[in-house]
Length: 336
Image 1 (cartoon, helix red, strand yellow):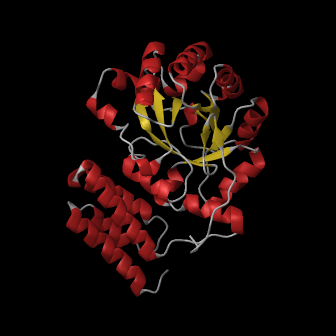
Image 2 (spheres, rainbow, N blue to C red; image 1 turned 135 degrees about the vertical axis):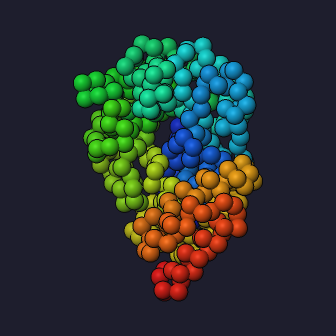
């Protein structure tokens, strides 16, 4: 980020929730925990989302499930993403998260993971529009906070019903729709069909958020330009480059953006690890950060020794030694 740069970006409004810009961190299981959401917010995103939360787990009082609702003032506004297939359970869980003080609720109707769809949740709900409508109506009645729904293009090319589901979502009182234009059977393979985002925007009056294949800042701007969507949700690209939010906003305003220096990368890696240790303890933080260290250095040169050393990391000392050694090597070679 350029020193002294002040963002003046389009501000997205979802229901009564006014965001500071049009960028959203996607909910990602095992990834968008509190520490990473704090980092994403520091990097400029307008809205962060929790990991996908089981409505059944909330209503049963499962302690681990309720930890997903831990939030911090510095990450606000924050949306909680719920998944489930039972009407009453979804309504009750929406009430629970509302009492926790979240700023918005997102209903997951796009997850293609087998254990989720086997329960009738996630993308499976797109195969049953009537049930989806009952769930959304019940949730809408149970909470006053802004409500969005994340969907896919449909279950398969033979069940391409996103536009139909989009109209159902709007009729049930939701405040926004997020479209990931791949079919559930595709998972994350194949190219996302952005034309569906544009057609959804033309089909409904509530805000439409695009998602899928936004790997660099220029593609976030391209998605908005080509689809006329109101917001862009970024997921996997933010894991290796949390700076993507700042970079996109800077590109929007100035036509260019700064890339992080090795020192800035190392500083953020250390900060992320410290946040995780405070949140889940050193052992679990180390386990997560071993993979995140490789993501943070994705695309950088001479990663061979670092990749080899990751398996030997068993705690804070070895983690910082491995990270410091790698970035010191980059500085020694004059890389920036």
